[in-house]
Image 1 (spheres, helix red, strand yellow):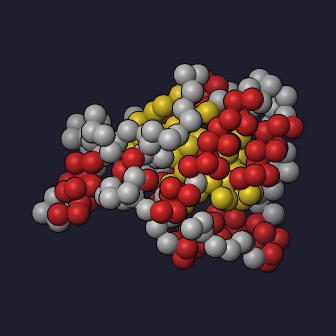
Image 2 (tube, rainbow, N blue to C red; image 1 turned 180 degrees about the vertical axis):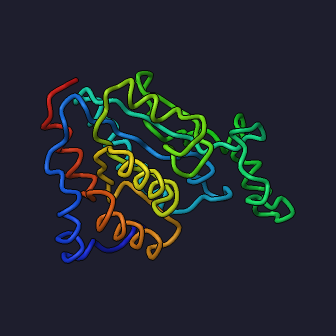
Length: 226
C-alpha cells in the first residue's frame, strides 16, 4: 500500500519562499535515484519493505521520462567498505547486534542484496555509483558530486529510499552545496508513513521543493533535450 497523505498547504506556502521550482532547467537537470537495491526492496531482505516495492513503477516512470528529455539518470547504491576513508567509524556499526551484522553483510559490494533491484529500469546510458554514507554528497568517495559537475547539473530531482535517511540526507547536503533540489513525492519510500511524512515536511519547509512524481514526469516532458 502506498504512503498516505499529502503535504499540508501551510508547509507548501512557507517552503515556497526558499525552494520553488515550477520548471526543470533544460540541459542542467539530473535525476538521482537513491538506493533502489534489493536490500531495501526485496521481500525478506534486511531493510525490505512494501512501501519501497510500491515505488518501483513511479521511479521507473521518472527514469524513462528523464531519458526521453535527454536528462542524465544516476542510480546510487549504499555500500559498506572496511577500507579508509570509505569505512564508517567503528562505533557506528555494532557487529555484535545480529541485525546490524546482517545489514552490513547485505550491503557489501558483490552480494545479491547490494545490487539494484532487478525490476528497476536501468539503461546502459545511466550512471550507477556507490556511496559509503547516507548522504551521497557527503560520501568520501565523492562520486556523485564529481559526476554532477561533469554533467553540468544545477538541479537535482531525487527519488528512492529511504525517504527519511538517504534521500533526506542527500537533499539537505545538495541544498547546502548550492544545487536546486526537487524531491519526488510518490517515488520515495520509508518504513512507515510517519517517517516518510516527517521527512517530506521538513524537506519542503527548508531544503527542497516537493512535487508529485507524476507531475515531475510531465515536467521532464516539457523541457528541451540536453
